[in-house]
Amino acid sequence: MDHGETKRSIMHIAEQFLADKLSNRKQLGNLRQLRTVDHSVDFSSNDYLGLARSTELNKIIQGNYELIQPKRNGSGGSRLLSGNTSFSEELEEYLAHLFQSEASLLFNSGYAANTALLSTIPQKGDTILYDELSHASAKDGIRLSFANRYAFRHNNLNDLEHKLKKAIGRIYIFVESVYSMDGDIAPLEQIIQLSQKYNSALIVDEAHSTGIYGKNGNGLCCEKELEQQVFARIHTFGKAMGIHGACVVGSKVLKDFLINFSRPFIYTTAMNNHSLLAIHSAFNFLEKNHHLKKELQKKVSYFNLLLSDTFGEDELYHHIPSKSPIQALIIQGNEKVKNVSNVLQEKGLDVRPILSPTVKKGQERLRICLHTFNSEKEIQKLFLEMKSAVQAIQ
Image (cartoon, rainbow, N blue to C red; front, side, top):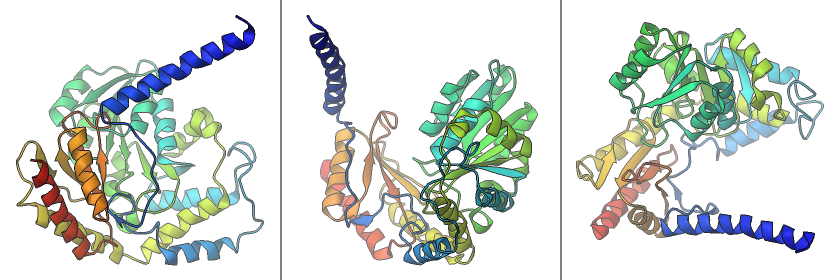
């Protein structure tokens, strides 16, 4: 066998492995596929306040960008090389003030911020305790650290304390203020009490609370006046704020440490000025449009009222009540939940199924996101069509 045949044989073995894994996933009913967004009624995006589609905000961003000189298409490098600008530093000062912290550090996405923080801060011999329903980005960052790591049962204070008693080294607790699948809220006050009792540092991912909680959207920790008792917070801008990027907020020492030791920060090309400007413009816009948060809560209350008497205690089909715009209707089994989702799609309602293994087997669900732009008529239609579709598969 010549060199060319050997190379083709190796390629075939590798591609056959990939094909077999994809085939297995297809047989299990959880093959992921890309799809374009159509003109259905949006009940799936994280654009809770409608800022991603806001033509008014878009005009503000574009108008402000015209004032920037000189204009550059990209940053040209990492922040430590050519990518740092006076505007990025001014934005970080603005965000630190907004989130009531000593300092903030920008990242290109929430995923990058979580992996940067959690892979860098905990050291060998330390312990990270994280909620079992933490986002994949947090889990990936935790895996990249050299610390001991243990999950605790979701929002379970007893299990957290049990693991705190056994933890060694410096101890870090990681939670989300609002969880992305159930839309429920962490018991932050009690978790802080435990963190103080066991001398541990609390990290809170505010991805799904940024924009919809707190003064001018500064998150749940600030709304509850707990920010000074939290070691680090992660705020992302690609959800309720309708744009892109993220930041880690905390002490000046934390910021300096990440700049010096965090590989996802050091080796990443910085955001360009247009992206930075969009962040500043979006928060300024929200500050002048407080009614958006109130309008969102009205839609959440209306949805919960409709579902309260219909999807109750049934183990196979039940609604998980949530005060956040993230709502979940459990429909056990990948095929069943996909069937219901397909029916809703055919009715012009964009509701996506969340399949195992993204969630635990038996926790498959429709993940429903409510928005300021969803009318009560659209929400009522969603409720009636879900009710009919679920009854059809029972």
